[in-house]
Length: 118
Image (tube, rainbow, N blue to C red):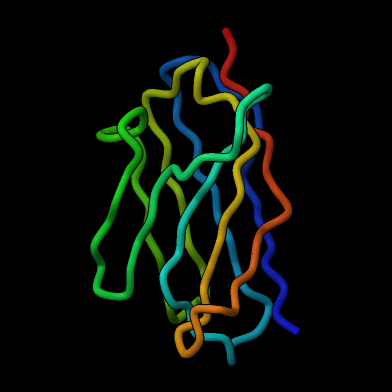
């Protein structure tokens, strides 16, 4: 069974930077499209950034120009580099990965708390 492990959350001041990572526990799993979601207090979970197999990216308007999604297939790891952080970025962040061969098979990370506060 594939397990997805997230790391890198924490507290950061406005204007600061933080990097989140998400790794699969087995080398036999090949990443298909990957994405990061977040859920702020009192709001629904929303898509933050997505990355397909060809390297094309898609970002939500509030994070465009500040966040960067990337992946390292050899390490079965995906990343979210966040910069110029704002208070409204405070949320629980979740990674989501699809199986390359079957997109109906996917996995969620358990969630990382990111708090932006002065």
